[in-house]
Length: 332
Image (cartoon, rainbow, N blue to C red; front, side, top):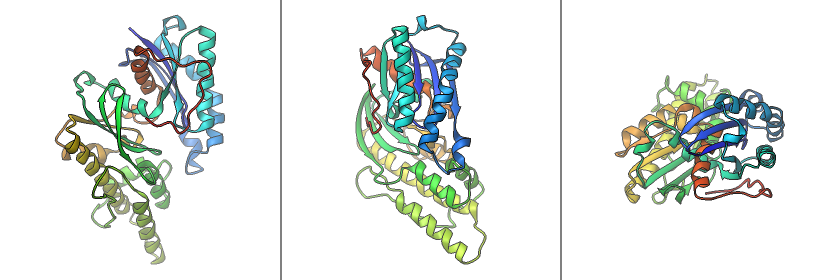
C-alpha cells in the first residue's frame, strides 16, 4: 500500500489530498479563487499567488483531517512543479519542501498535465482501462493530443498552435457578456440555442493533429460586432451554440482521426473543458471506442489527480531533491 499526500497550486485552485494506491481518495480539499478573478475576466497571477499563501496551511490540515491519518502514514509528499504560473507554483512547492524537511518524508515533483491524465484512474471502472489510449487534454491553457502506450509513457501527437479551447471559451464568453469562466456559461446557454444559425469555421487542417481556435474566436467576435452595429439584440444562446459546436467538431474529428491512425483502444478526455456536456456526449456518440471522462469534481485543477500520478512515479523509484525548482513551461 502506498499513501501519497499531494499539493496542487499551479493556477488559481489551492488543493491538497491524501491518495491511497493511486486510486482511492482518502481526503481532498480545494479552495477556489474563481469568484476573486471573475472581476478581472481571467486569472490575475499576483492575486492568485497571494491567495495561495493565505489558504494553503488550513487546506493541508483539512485534507489530513478528512483522511484521518497522520504524517507517519504518508509515504511521499507530492506537488505540482509545472506547468503553471510561477508565483502560484512556488507556493505549493515551498510548502511541500517544508513538509518534507520537517517530517523526513520523500518529496516528488510531478507534472500538472500528467495529473489531469491520471484523474481517470480515480474514477470507477479504471481497472478496465486498456492501452494504447488517445488522450485529449483540453483546458484553459492546454489543448493537446497524446498517444499513451503504457503507464507514464506518451507520444505527443499534436496541440493548439494558438488559443487553447478553454481560452477561446473564456474570450467568447466575455464578448457575449457572460460571467467568467466562460466555458460553463456558454455550455448552459448553448443548450437553449440553435447551433446552425451561425456558420462558424472549423479549423480542421487536412493532416496532423494540431488545433487552432484563434480564427474561430475572431469569427465570433466579428459576428457579434456586426449584430451590435446593426442595433440588434445579441442572440446569445444561438451564438453560444454555434461557437460551441465548432469547438466540439474540431476536438472530436481530430481525436477520432488519432484513434483511427494509431489503433488506440480507448479515449480519455481530461482538463477543465472535459466537463463540457456537449463534448462528453458527442465524443461518446461519434467514436467507436470507449470514451472516458473524469467525474466533474476532478475536471478542474485538484490535488487528487496529482496524488494519482505521483503514485505511479513513486513506485517506479522516482524522487526529487530538496533543491527541486518550479518548471512553469514543463511539457510531457
